[in-house]
Each structure stands twice: as C-alpha cells, then as structure tokens.
Length: 90
Image 1 (cartoon, rainbow, N blue to C red):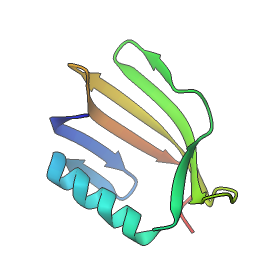
Image 2 (tube, one colour):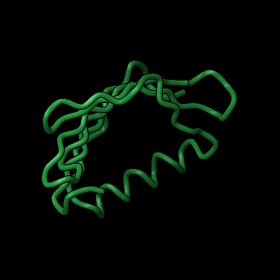
Image 3 (cartoon, helix red, strand yellow):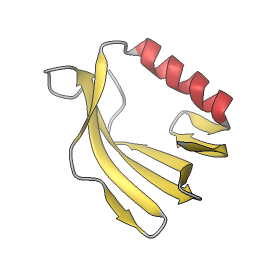
Image 4 (tube, one colour):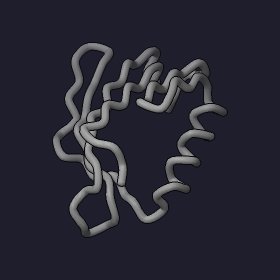
C-alpha cells in the first residue's frame, strides 16, 4: 500500500520507510487501543493526490479528536501521507 521510501508527516514527527511507519502506527495504537477511525466524508482524489476527513475515539462514541489526511500517490502506492489534526488526542 505504501512505497518503500514512503514518508509520513505527523505533528509529532516525520517518519520515512516501512519500518518507521510500522513503529509509529504501533505506538499510536498502543496509546489509544480502543479507538477506531471513522471517515467524516467521502475520500476525494485529484490527479496523484487525495484527502479524507476523519474522527477517532472509542467505537460508538463521539470522536475524541478529528483530522484530515492528505496523500500523494506514486506508481499506485502512497508515497507521502500528511496528517493534520484539528485537536490533540485526549
């Protein structure tokens, strides 16, 4: 799903490559194990980019935080993921 040299840009840092992506994703899930991500809109795509608004929190509850993901695609895979947060997780 991601290129070998994928870059993920979060408010907490920049992560490059599959190993770094797996590490930060695992840390985020460990910090909020009961949270699920719920899309708040239909994904939109233009050329080699896309975006989707989302919320995260315990299943069945209002989101604890919301954000917007923007992706850049190269050769059919995600080359860059920019994560914008509307608020910090609580």
